[in-house]
Image (cartoon, rainbow, N blue to C red):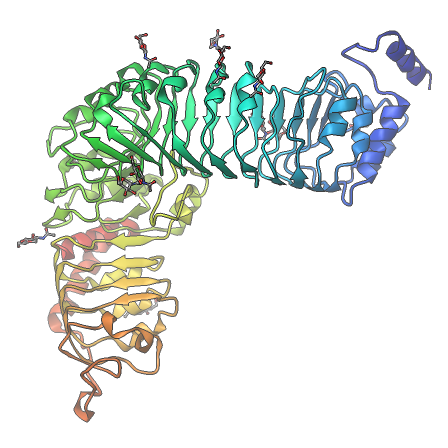
Length: 614
Ligand SMILES: *[C@@H]1O[C@H](CO)[C@@H](O)[C@H](O)[C@H]1NC(C)=O
Ligand SMILES: *[C@@H]1O[C@H](CO)[C@@H](O)[C@H](O)[C@H]1NC(C)=O
Ligand SMILES: *[C@@H]1O[C@H](CO)[C@@H](O)[C@H](O)[C@H]1NC(C)=O
Ligand SMILES: *[C@@H]1O[C@H](CO)[C@@H](O)[C@H](O)[C@H]1NC(C)=O
Ligand SMILES: *[C@@H]1O[C@H](CO)[C@@H](O)[C@H](O)[C@H]1NC(C)=O
Ligand SMILES: *[C@@H]1O[C@H](CO)[C@@H](O)[C@H](O)[C@H]1NC(C)=O
Ligand SMILES: *[C@@H]1O[C@H](CO)[C@@H](O)[C@H](O)[C@H]1NC(C)=O
Ligand SMILES: *[C@@H]1O[C@H](CO)[C@@H](O)[C@H](O)[C@H]1NC(C)=O
Ligand SMILES: *[C@@H]1O[C@H](CO)[C@@H](O)[C@H](O)[C@H]1NC(C)=O
Ligand SMILES: *[C@@H]1O[C@H](CO)[C@@H](O)[C@H](O)[C@H]1NC(C)=O
Ligand SMILES: *[C@@H]1O[C@H](CO)[C@@H](O)[C@H](O)[C@H]1NC(C)=O
Ligand SMILES: *[C@@H]1O[C@H](CO)[C@@H](O)[C@H](O)[C@H]1NC(C)=O
């Protein structure tokens, strides 16, 4: 009691004191806040147990910082405005709980005149925030309300850091933000914002982090203004409908060259156009991430990019770029993530570098001939896309050098055009991993975590020959198998029927013969099935999954018969068995021996496939 009395005296004598022990009034406000919740994570009990002491010793309360810090405490229910009675409060952190209802922002700010930091991110809060919360004696510097359900318009006031991402804000970005001369971080991605980026925004010259991905922003980005943001290090405008044009030197993104602090440029999924080579990347010595996926850039890949020696992630695919990448690309020693499309890769066998590459996509890159040897040096590669090239010949033997990593637990899990294999062990390891950039398979799908990535083997549209190996039945995690448009021969192996996770099976456009295995009816998740344009024969299995696919799945096999085809089955065609030929049995024996030699299942599968696709 004596201590409390002393505290009140101190309070009266020195209202502005930074380090105040808490008063009875504040204790009761805190208790009312906590008992106002529907679930308090045991805090009310713990606080009451310590009731005689100053609340400075209460869990989550720090008096020297005038802080209430209760992140991830399992709090549920609504935030009582009584928190506003903590007039000396400077920092409030209630992130990662299950709080709902409204955030009493005005009440908090009008009474807690020192409140500088509010973090209520990752809750279920909703409602609108006051549009202009600016008022006399504004002290709030950090407002993090990301990952909630807030609606209405975007608040405007003089913040230092404002994170509104992952909410349901709509309307335009308020021009008033441009008056925030101290604003350093502005994140508002994944909302429903629309309209243009206001020119005024570029008057907030302290901005270091500007991020508005996945909204409905449109219009032209004013490149001249963006150069005001000299300290900009992170620009993320991906997933909008913005446009802009180069080569006009003052327009975006050529103007970006003057923002020499840039670390991240993300303009993906917009409509930027112009000659990319007009941008001088050589000044962006700090650049680590450049993502220009899905835009309308033209010309060649700028030489200056090769001087960004800190670049870790580079994605230029789905633009209108052409030409050939320079061997200087191997200067980019830090690259972890590389994604091109449509450009030719250097075939130079002497290329060295890329030691750090974990993700490489070279789809539609006009690769011809053999898989380039320099790929063999990518020791820690985890995902490789080589689809839609003109690769021929066998899967090279050095593939085992990449898969050598499996011996130390570093297995490339999703080699898609090369034989790709997974094991439970490797997926567990990769669960923790997040790629430098989200990976897209279909336009709408986003994968940050490789295990969320459907396991797919895509060897389609190449010129592979030979049989489909029986051992393909061991790739049990496969969700999608595409061997379409090659020159594969022989029968559809029965073992494919063991791939019970398959959702997509495409064997079309080969020279496959024999009957359709009855067991395909076991593939209960199959939603896309295509065996058209082969030389298959006999009846299509009736009364099962396979018979539900349309005729287009089977067309172009004159000897096939079935109810969905013009060619109905006669009595003589009811049974065609696909029997194991002697030759096939011999191959299997050989493969078992081969596998035993290497002893690592994962690697084994790759080698098996390499033998058969030769
Ligand atoms: C209560 O106070 C004591 C000492 O003041 C402290 O050691 C303890 O951690 C506090 N919290 C709980 C839950 O008992
Ligand atoms: C709030 O607490 C979480 C969890 O400890 C932490 O990650 C976050 O940085 C804190 N917020 C602020 C603004 O310090
Ligand atoms: C909320 O944003 C602030 C400012 O950027 C940051 O310090 C804090 O860590 C964020 N909170 C969480 C839970 O990440
Ligand atoms: C910015 O501040 C100036 C001066 O205080 C004011 O006149 C102007 O209206 C403000 N701009 C916006 C967009 O709020
Ligand atoms: C930016 O600020 C300058 C001076 O502070 C002012 O003259 C200019 O009109 C402002 N621009 C915008 C677009 O608000
Ligand atoms: C940019 O950053 C530098 C160094 O941190 C700082 O001195 C300068 O004031 C900043 N510029 C603006 C406009 O905030
Ligand atoms: C970029 O900087 C150069 C040299 O500092 C300057 O001449 C040029 O005008 C600037 N460009 C823009 C668009 O600001
Ligand atoms: C992309 O921008 C061009 C002009 O640069 C425009 O003609 C076209 O309609 C835009 N496309 C989309 C999808 O906005
Ligand atoms: C590229 O521009 C063309 C016409 O200028 C437009 O039809 C197309 O939608 C644009 N592409 C993107 C990704 O915006
Ligand atoms: C496959 O090889 C043939 C020649 O044998 C060639 O005409 C064709 O273009 C090749 N197809 C692909 C996709 O490379
Ligand atoms: C595979 O690795 C071994 C040992 O690391 C090396 O000697 C060999 O040259 C490599 N082969 C290829 C094709 O890279
Ligand atoms: C399917 O898997 C089972 C169990 O793993 C195995 O016994 C069987 O031989 C496989 N069938 C084929 C056709 O590979």
